[in-house]
Length: 452
Image (cartoon, rainbow, N blue to C red):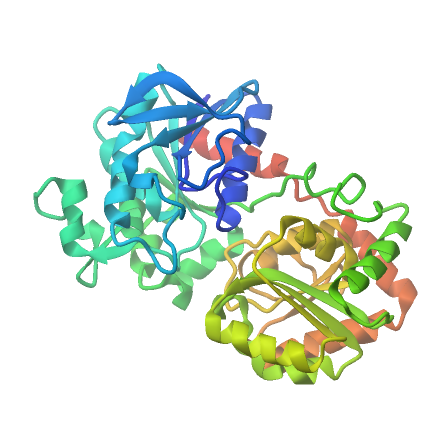
């Protein structure tokens, strides 16, 4: 099967979140299963062409030039160079770019012409989130069937209605593409795609039945069996504690002694007290969705427990300031690193005992999967993919209510469990034996494609 996979970001070339990881790992898993896959994404000004070995192709399309990453079997990564994207950010800098509707509508319109210029005739067009959702408009007349994956329904691509001119050439705007008086790129894609997927089974149910529908519950329910939840996977080669080059010591499920060395090294690197307290990590966007409106009011109470906390991330400036204030008061117990550091992220997953994700909602979540792989027991709110991947009392600790008290209860259960070191180690071993590789997810997407 030939798959054209379109995404606004693709790791390691461009990445703002989990979409970038998925847009790299899933196509590679499909290629390993024998499918021919072309991944296409914009070429942003921040993409380091020489470092990634990108070379211009002799093909030009839609007023832009194509660049290719080095070839690798059944998969090709192709990037569209255009003045629309010759700037540092993916979606913006200190806020969204005001012309994002025009940028991504132009990219979506160009997908099939680019494929034809490459002499690639796809059997399926796989789109991702609002930036590529408009492509469903341009494949209805003789094009391939389309699959649209919703990675986060909270980001719908809402714009002033006059921006619809980039899609409909001045004609009337169908109701499917409007939402409370605005242009909605994601809603339009949901209503127009041949199949819609989400990134976990529980999230597929939540967006149909709860407030997590963000006003699109009726449209999602009307899809019936054309809405499918498929759990994301992770790249188990990149995220492998036995071979991870970012760690001071490697370890595996059978010999976990290196994890103790990682723990001590992380405490030293971050200026934490050398202590046997429960070391809890977070690698995350600092935002309400990620549970910081629960965490910040409870932070000093949490740090009075026998634990230390490490947070790596950035986001909401007011929340960053609140975290910084506490970190200055308790530097030996709380280490805050604002920004993102890929190598440090790996060391946090490896060196911590537990990993906290008190999310308001979490379509899938990748961090808990990395934590499980590294024997760091997740403490999570039971929502979306967190509910699907963490088993309470077996591979981690979960809580239901979105309240600080419920989160504190799960943290205290983790603390109590760790006093029984034999039981804790049993849970760590069980966590590390979980298989969240992309193979099962790729098979599920393969079945979805075959339906079309």
